[in-house]
Amino acid sequence: MAPENTFYTKDHEWVQIKGDTATVGITDYAQHSLGEITFIELPAAKKQLKAHDVIAVVESSKAASDVFSPIAGVVTEVNNQLSSKPELINQDCSNAGWICKLKVANPDTKNLMNAAQYEQYLKTI
Image (cartoon, rainbow, N blue to C red; front, side, top):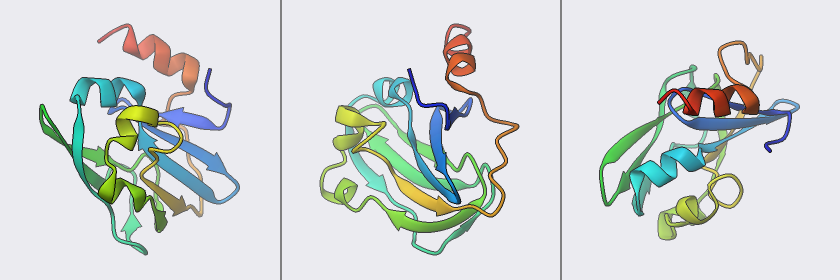
């Protein structure tokens, strides 16, 4: 079960919020659907994002997919390990495979799902 401060989108991103820092990645469902991830285009540091802006592009053996920011904020850190080891997303998408961290002024989660809601959502697709 995911921590209480982890939220999910219908596009299969997750965001974990601690204070004014939000860590963003893609869900296990997303990485499994994509197949073997071969490349990721990471966001630029200091990039200002609104919720639903494209934050990264993930390329896999099956497709290239946009990753959307679940929350508004400024990119403060990117997971540079993914540049040389994009397979970390497949191996550990919710820990070592995180994509970036954002500084958030207002962590608005009203349009996001908690873990139980996301599990229910997965049953409908």
